[in-house]
Length: 303
Image (cartoon, rainbow, N blue to C red; front, side, top):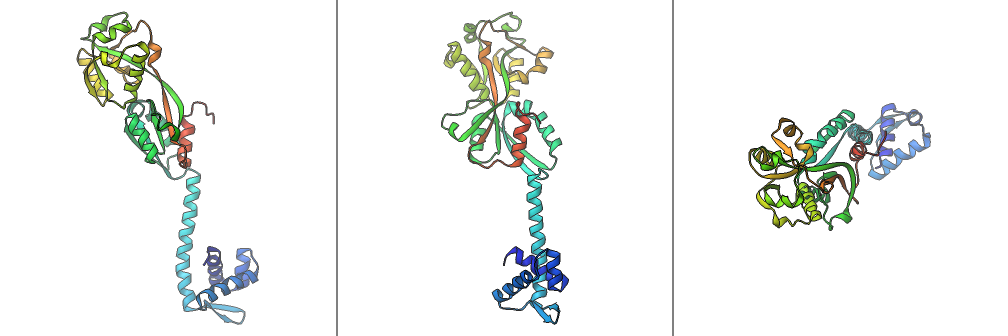
């Protein structure tokens, strides 16, 4: 049984007249008769009593009318749901974001997105760059937002788009001798203790890349602690005598209050610049909700 046959049957059941049903459906009366006859032949049971020029439902016809109306109603709901998805009235968006982006850059964009598309349910998971890349590859996230380097093995499967730029700041607290320095040279970076993010963090990747550019092996630094939270790094550095490299987005308030001070480097600060990347799987279908988010964060997009 096709949906078209079911619609024709329900129209005849409503009007109890083949010609009126045909007029309501904007098809010919022979097409209506052929559809009903095909159903009756297929299942070997009459659906209507033919009483001259009018018809009445048989017991089987009444049962089919009841069930058919329910089925057609569900089909209409499905069609409306697909239409709503297409028009961004409903849907879901699953994002994976690295910690710096998720805590400092993303909230304003998510708020704007929800204002534009209030019917879209957004779920955002935070993790380091490696974890977010793995989630996009598995299909856990529609889109990923990271500030780290994508592993070479993953790059063929992921598209990368630069959506913003960030810069790492080397910071110290009031107890550190660099707090009052007018300038610190690159070679002096090996003369202090450091608090660092864990391996796999985009912040750590960028800092290690900068050290390589400056000719300083990471092994030459004295790392006193490795933690998984930028907030913890800020607290440890502000209260202790170690240095850290951290996103300038995260320290604006602490700099203003004087709890932290950015160390002015004599040279090489350009090495601390890094892009924010939007990731998606090259082969997975991109939903309308995901496409709308891509447009919102694309710096080149103009509505």
